[in-house]
Amino acid sequence: MSTTMPKAGEVSRNWYILDATDKPLGRVAAQAAVLLRGKHKPTFVPHVDCGDHVIIINCEKAILTGKKLEQKKFYWHTGWIGGLKEVSYKKLMAEKPERAMTIAVTGMLPHNSQGVAQAKRLRTFRGADHKHAAQKPEVFEF
Image 1: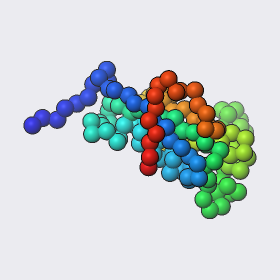
Image 2: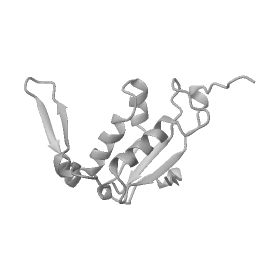
Image 3: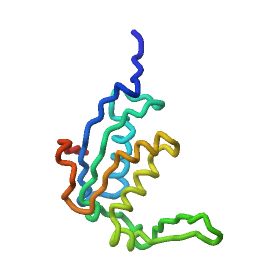
Image 4: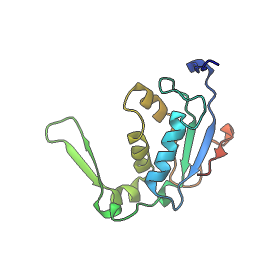
């Protein structure tokens, strides 16, 4: 019996909704990364992008365990001299919780062109409302 290799044009993509209400931010992000990469499918191969679309709702209700809310910071560099910026997760979760979720998920994806394409299939929303009802997404329980 030979192994079947999926082709990029033959991949079928489903839509899934993940609800982050009262769940740790990292656990939701890890499950979203698995769905975006396609590792839950039996036809997964690392060199073909066979992942699905993921919608994460209620990002503002995700929790950070321990003292992460006060102690954890997100750092980035602007590209200019002395341009190292930082923001605490307490401020980030209060102002832009969907950005915090996006940062967590993209950090778990491959850092190459395939990871960029997978990150484009991620949609995060602050509350329970989203604008992708026409795609008929399935609720993913984990």
